[in-house]
Every structure is written in structure tokens, then in C-alpha cells.
Amino acid sequence: MTTVLALDQGTSGTKAIVINGEGALLGLSEHAVRPRYLSGGGVEQDPHELLASVVEAGRAAVSRAGVPIDVVTLANQGETVLAWDQVTGEPLSSMIVWQDRRAEGVCAELAEHRDTFSERTGLVLDPYFSAPKMAWLRRNVTREGVVTTSDSWLIHQLTGEFVTDVSTASRSLVTGLDTGDWDGELLELFGLGEERLPAIVPSDAVVGRTTAFAGTPVVGGLVVDQQAALLAEDCLRPGEAKCTFGTGAFLLANTGSTATRSHHGLAASVAWQTHGQTTYCLDGQVYTAASAVRWMQQLGYITTAADMDKVAAKDTGGVLAVPALAGLGAPWWRPEAKATVTGMTLSTTVGQLVLAILQGIAAQVAELSSAVAGDLQGPLTRLRVDGGLTQCKTLMQSVADLMQVELDVYPSAHATPLGAAALARMAVDPGLSLAEAIVAWRPNLVYTPRWSAEQATDFRARWAMAAQST
Image (cartoon, rainbow, N blue to C red; front, side, top):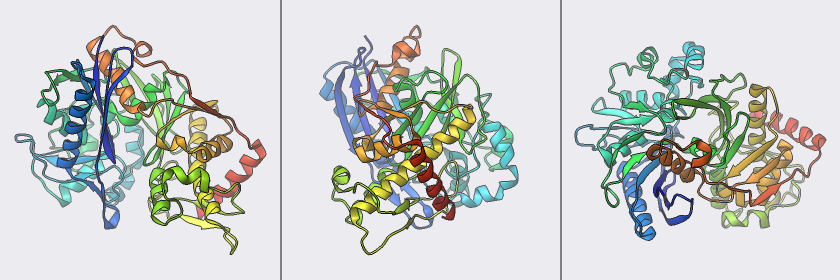
């Protein structure tokens, strides 16, 4: 049976798990990473700290598991980039995190090509994706070395290889959605035409070996973190969707083997590519979910995230919040949007503000679900959810109320590494199907709407008007 070390390298830390072929958790370790939030919309990470978190978390998990590792896999942030020396492996810049907005000027210069980018890549021309950040690095930091997404650098550190997987490449704005290859014309538009770029490999590829942890296991099954969670939650059929509640909230829906372009403000990208077949997805993001909770902590509204259900009031007393603390993501794509709170009076309580902010996060997820329904020409019938904020009953109930669907809560806190582990199993055992590779699960909690359809419609209409005003 295949034993996997799965590394989930995220915005605020790295999680490493060791699981056996039956899906049993044998070892776990988590190491924090501290992003730096800069003026002008900059968000950076220290590459050395990031790499140390991967190596230390991986070694600790392997040590706790106490068994040989057959394969190592990595799930990555998707759109975080850096410049580095391909000979020495040394970083030549900080990591420019997916949240970073400093490439807005790059995108503004290319606005006349917006439709071209959308048609060829399935993505919206926005600094959220990796190519604008790569271009910004080349203009403002260094022309030396190579500039890639974080996964290519980490895999090079582990194996010496120069690769990226197709799901990560599809988040770049310079990869053809239909072809899965780098697009030379789009690279030229960003001024990246002469760059040395990593080879694009399928999700079930073995890319090398590593001695960074224990023994010499192969490395394979590479994937973007959100796509990994989609896989782990068994969203294998078109129309099935999940939402991960982490730093942001990320809703993804499987669209099958068709590279569907969104007409409702979502991004289209590769979910995974296995056995030579490509599966696509639509996705949208809420920029501030757990980060909005941290903001409430800083203001003293709550002491810890676990306080939210105790502090949140039963009703908002007319308070309406648009918690666009880092702008609005899909389907608006308005990074300049600012958070608003309306309807307050002298009698407004902290509990009402907390509830309003949680409802504001839920309202953004509901807008994403409506966009998915519009593109798929049919409503979502259920939503699978994972991430730390699924522990907040108030938030989950608000999502169910506003979407008017049932929510299935994923029973593990490790959806992303479990999804990557499934692809790693397929990399070393090509005879496995996706359904056989994932760990079977049942929801540990199901949320059913308590609001009527009329209540949900009324709230969403009022909230949408507030969002528009931002």
C-alpha cells in the first residue's frame, strides 16, 4: 500500500500529513509562515522561511509516522511568484503572494486585450493571477534568473527539476486553457516572451526524487491547493462544487471535460489532468474570510475565532456589512472596493456587527454560487465545505440560508493534502482511477436552510445594492 507525505503549502503556513494507502493519518505537522502586508497593496513572504516550513513540517510528520515514505506530493498556493537563480536555487526576490495588488498597473496597460485573455486562458485580466506579478517583478525588482510560481521553486529545491503542473500553469494568464501549453503571444504582451519557463506536467506525473525528508521517495501528484480540495471532496462529476473557508473563501465547481468560459465573472481553469484526460472547473474567490475574522480580533470584537458563535447576535438589528477589507473578488473583480457597514444606531451591539460581517462573507459565497449556476445553466443543489471556518455554525448556517441549499461539512481538516495524496497515489499506481484514489467520506454535519426563499432573496437584494455602492 502506498504511503504518502502530502505537503499543503499555504498563505499562512505549511501543513504536512503522512497517510497510508487506506487513508489513515499516520503523522501530522504544521509550521506557520508570516506574510508581510505592505502599503500599496503589497503582500510578501520570505522564501527561506517558506522553504523551511516545508522541510521542517515534512520531516516532523515523517518522524511521527515512523514508516517509510513512497511518494511526496505538494499542493501550492497557485498564484504566488518569485524570481530565483536556476543554477544555485537561491531566491532573487521575496515571494509575491496571490493577494498582492501591485500589478494593477500592468493589467491596466493591457486592458484592450482583456477579451483575448479571457478567451484563450479562461481567466479575468487581474493581478490575482501569476503572470501580472511576474511582469511586475521583472519591471521593479530584478531581470536576473527565472521568475516562476512558488511550486516550481519548491520542487526544484526538493528534486532539482524545473517543472510546474498543469493546474498551476492554468492560473497564470499565459497558458492556453484548451491546449495546456504556454501561449507565446500572451507571454509577449506581458513582456515575458524571453523567459525560461518550467515544463508543464500532468497532475499524475512523477517528476523526480527527493532526499529532503527520509529515504529517496519519488515526488509527484502536483496540484493547486483549491483543486486538491475539490478532488478530496469527491466533486468528480460536472456541477458538483465545494467551498473552502480559509484566509479567503474559494468556491470551485467541476465542469467536466469541457473548458467552459464563464459569462458571469468567474475564472475557468484546469482542475486536474490524469490518464491523459483533462477535467476543468469554474472558480470564484472571496478575498477576506478568516482574514476578516482576524480583523475582528484586532478590533476586540472577539477574543478568538472560536468566540464567534457565542458573540454573534441572533439578528443584526438592521446592520448590513460588506466586508470587502481587501476588495471584492469574483464576480465583481473590484480590488479598489472598500468595506462598508450600514444601518447602525446607538443601540447597535458588537454581536450584531459580528453577525453582519459573517452574513457579508456568506452573501459573497452566495453570489459566487449564482454565477456558477448561470454558467452551468442550472442551480447548485448542494455545496461541500471545508476549512477552519466551517467550525463557525453561524457562518455555515448563513451560507445555507442565503444559497438555499444544504451544506455537507467535510469531516477532515486536511482536504487539500488529502486531495494531493490521491493524485500522488495515481502517479505511482497508474492503474488507479480518481474514485479509487480518494479517501471515501461522509459529512460530519449537514446544514439545512432555515430562512425561506423570500427572506434569502430580500436579503441578497439589499446586500447586492450595498456591495454595488462600494
